Amino acid sequence: MIIYGVALLSVCLILGMLIGETLGVLLGVKANVGGVGIAMLFLIWASNSHKFKALVEGASGTGIKFWSAMYIPIVVAMAARQNVAAAIDGGLLALAAGVAAVIVSFALVPVFSKIGRGPSTSESNTDEQGPN
Amino acid sequence: MDIFETVFVRNNLVVAFAVVGVTIWLSYFLAKRLTNNRIHGSAIAIAFGLLAAYWGGITTGGRTGVADIALLGGIGLMGGGMMRDFAIVATAFGVHISEL
Image (cartoon, rainbow over all chains, first blue to last red):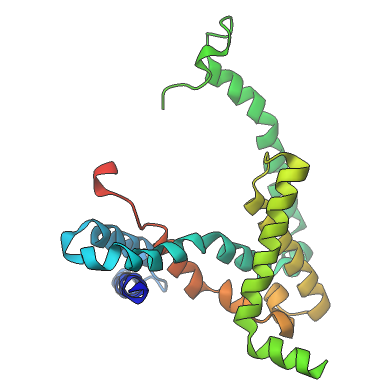
């Protein structure tokens, strides 16, 4: 049942958020401290535990995989609801800094890829990828 | 026109799924055709999203980008904090503790 997986995911998120809010109160921060991360740890633990096998395998698992695959579309929707107009109006300097950082990073790509090849530039590109 | 608006506003989350889907399809198409996949389709899709948000902001004067347009209100729900956290947590699925 797909809903079992979705329900497990929901319970993990709610538990994580509750712990995150509690941590926020304890630390005197008016925010959720690590709720999403704690929820992820719960889900990882549940998906590796034998007790929850029925909730993460087969059809139940596809209920979680669906939401995992929806992450990028949701990020696109998030981008589409940002207050971009105000950001451009009020923060031209920040915008310029961001654009400059991206341009510099792109310019550094060839430099870094040369470093990655290291001393063996005389050899042909047999070891293009260093050990990871 | 009234019927059109009623359907879109009542089903705004479904409209959001469709609009985001079309945007992503177009982005992946452009990524493949124009950049030979050097720029990932999702990056182009996010750029489209930001452009749309800018356009929504200047036309409506609101604060939530394209979601201030009544017909696209579902984008606000789809891109809201709840769905975002739900999907992020789901990405942890399939991680094996032995691989950490």
